[in-house]
Image (cartoon, rainbow, N blue to C red; front, side, top):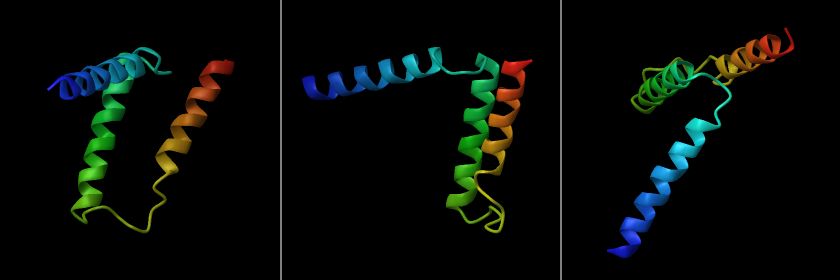
Length: 71
């Protein structure tokens, strides 16, 4: 029982710290999580376009953040 409680507490603490140190705003982070979850479900159930680059959106967002940081 103590192992389960410790594991759950560690999971919650890890998520909280991850959200606090995320490089985007809260609304951006929530939108990214929602989109990522939606994309994973589509991929899992075979509804995603397998010909497209799975990293394209990530690379675009990374470039946007980089451009905003230097501006």
